[in-house]
Image 1 (spheres, rainbow over the protein chains, first blue to last red):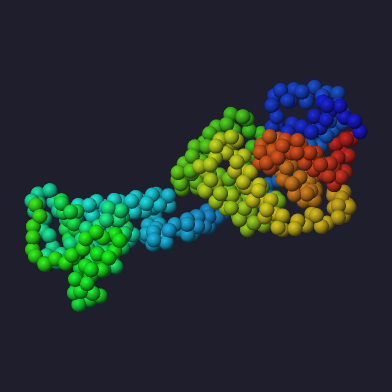
Image 2: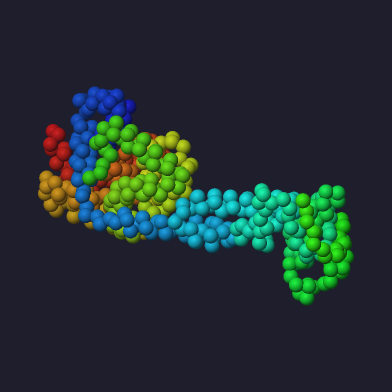
Amino acid sequence: MYMNAPHRHTIDTIPWLANGRISDEERRVLDEHLVDCAECNAEFELQQRIHSAMTHDESRVDYAPGASLQKLWSRIGNEEETQLPIAVSAAVANARNLRPRMMQWLVAAVVVEAIGITLLSVMQGTTPAPTAAVLPVPPPVYRTVTTTTVTVPTSAALRVVFAASFTVADVNALLAQYHLEIVSGPSAREGAYGLATTVAASELPDTIPHMAASLRAHPGVRLAEPLVQTSASKP
Amino acid sequence: MEHFGHSPATPRIRNDERERALLARVAEQDRTAFEELYIGYHRRLTRFLMRLAPRYDIAEEVINDTFWIVWQKAGDFRGGSQVSTWIMGIAYRRALKALRALKPEAEMQPLAAVSATLLVDDPNDANATESWVLDALKHLPLEQRMAIELAYYLGHSCEEIGAIMQCPVSTVKARMFHARQKLKQLLPQLAGEVDKGST
């Protein structure tokens, strides 16, 4: 059946006339058509009755937002934990009372801080402070502003100059491989570091002279020589 | 009943402003704001979903899926629509997926059998009318049912339903038109009473 445009428009729009969600302008247009159209009037009355029947449905629904919300928090907590790197998940587990986003930022800040401190320490010849379980480092040696001299450990066994292209990570890996740590340096002239062993001599895989020879063969090492152990002070 | 349909525009705008502020805090992972939003929608969504399938476990699953997305994506909300439309759009898609997996009884039951049951009682009885309408709604295809529930039960405008269903306004009107035609087939006596009253 052919329907003229106002009739078609009214028929299509009647549901929102019934639920009250049309503009005043639209309502005026529809009212004009409804004055003369019995079919649209009947449809409007029917839709009003259906709308009324649907909105008066007060079904007795038992709802428990608290319990449902708890389930959702558990789910969010579980999924956020699995998204975090393995290295930091233990730290997150110990700090569940912190907000997850805040926790991630804190962990990232600690990692950045650890890298920065390590880099600074290597450049200044001090031992880096222990931080997050990201970089295995020895206990710290503290220096106060009133300290006039810094005691250099007497166990420096090797003097080593690293290649300029050698990164901090490369240095750390090499030191770990040979059970060594930086105890002094870099010297002003050659940029040499004093290295000490981190384990007893009996536990070393090789003798100091052999270790020096082995280090010299490494592409990241420009110079490596054994030292006679002495006590010394550095201003 | 909590209902959008007859509230004036100003409270609606005010409510949207409040929800935008809450959502901005949710984007910053503010749990208190998230819980306020969740509690505010839980009742509305539970009732809406329970009308579509009387299974609280499914309603809860859809609501929590919806709000899990709200928690993850609150920062992506750009304000192009009302917050309620955005949240209802997410809920609609989650509900559609969950309900399609249920194989609704309505599609398996012949319409003729339903029409016969609808003619038994007095259509002037308000409770009976309500009961008939609810029975008849169960026999609509899911998307038509959703369209009419969004319009009549939740009181959304045509444009809002288009945004929720992610379809043009013309599609919303077509779905509503077909839903109304089918309801008329299912409610002949009710429609007859209206016709008599109007002549």
